[in-house]
Amino acid sequence: QVQLVESGGGLVQAGGSLRLSCAASGRTFSSYTMGWFRQAPGKEREFVGAIKWGATNTNYADSVKGRFTISRDNAKNTVYLIMNSLKPEDTAVYYCAVQSAPYGSVYGSESVYGYWGQGTQVTVSS
Image (tube, rainbow, N blue to C red; front, top):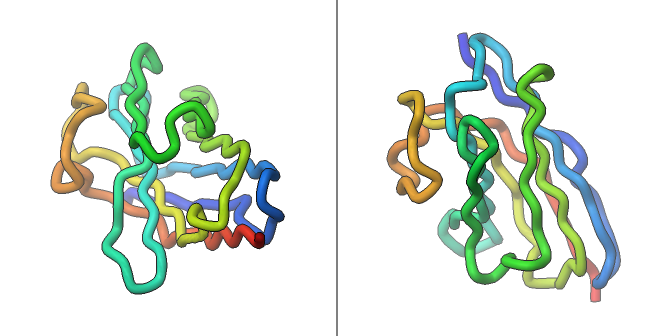
């Protein structure tokens, strides 16, 4: 049974930083592209970024490019989202997800992600 557990969310002032972690279990994820998404109150869930199975490529939403970085440690089955220069508009519940099929693209749509974590709240105060 695949499980994804996010951690590291919290309250931070604008301009601050947070590191989110996503611990995966239930299979070996080294062959799977993993992504981060977020959902703000009253808004649809949106793509934040993704990292290729071999960590050789990443893709980011324009709204976070240059501020957020995704990395992964396949030995630990863990993916990280390092968020710098946080803005109030980054406030959301952040979810990690893994694609259903191996060797997927970092440009895949939300529909290719078959497993999701429960989410962690990030609140950025102004």
